[in-house]
Amino acid sequence: MRSVSVIALCTALAVNALVICQPAVAQATPSLEELVKSARSGPGKLPLPPGFEPFVELEELVRNAESGNAEAQLELGELYDTGWGVPKNAVEAVKWYTRAAEQGDADAQSNLGVMYANGEGVTKNAVEAFKWFTRAAEQGHAPAQSNLGNMYAEGDGVTKNAVEAVKWFTRAAEQGDVPAQFNLGFMYANGEGVPKNAVEAVKWYTRAAEQEDASAQANLGFMYAKGEGVPKNAVEAVKWYTRAAEQGHALTQFNLGLMYANGEGVPKDLIRAYKWANLAAASGENAALRDELERNMTTDQIAEAQRLSVAFVPKPEVKP
Image (tube, rainbow, N blue to C red):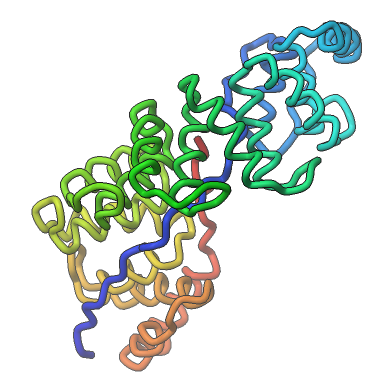
């Protein structure tokens, strides 16, 4: 079989999930506020701790919110937004986020920006989203800064401006915001809003990749594979490709299949090459690599590779 050497770079700007604040870790006996924040970090509802009476605390929360307490308004908006303890109601979430946001609460401003950006509980309006992200970002709110960077990068709700995008990505990235770190790496890699700088791209991709961002891991693997911004190192490329591929990143699964097919950074292994190429093809990537491998494998090898493909379960991507 001929050597296949084309390795693709993830070139699309990351789509920020427009995260709602930063998740907090629940304590052994969490308060209502802690439970609300923790509920945002996972798909399911949290179990009630012994003796916890949510409706007693909810009544007090509503009273405080109605009396103008911004923190209570934010928490009540979060309850309606997540559906924790109350029926999920995006319109009510927007109502309470707005009241807290108008008092200057940065979390509420950021969350309200999310609602306008996504059209949740309110008519989708990029200009309004931009307004609220800006207010929160100017207070140092990292997710809002990241989302504001996205709006400048895409020209969504504001005139497209790569320099402004880099400015806000940088502020968020320096606070540890993972999507901003990835996007800042992308901007440096492609010379958008800043002079092209592969070393800086590697730096920011690495920071995001170490926090298990699959797209950053994919691009970092590419940088090592090509020797861009770092000395060429196929072993490091395989390491980062593997971490992304194990999260189900299809393009990286294809690239990892190539590395196994050619014995770059790993011993040549047609079975593992087929496994990754097959998984990539199942997700819509080019099936040419898998088909070429198949022509050079025995029936038993193909059966084992297909077994590994079927058994594959992607690791959940860690969300910021």
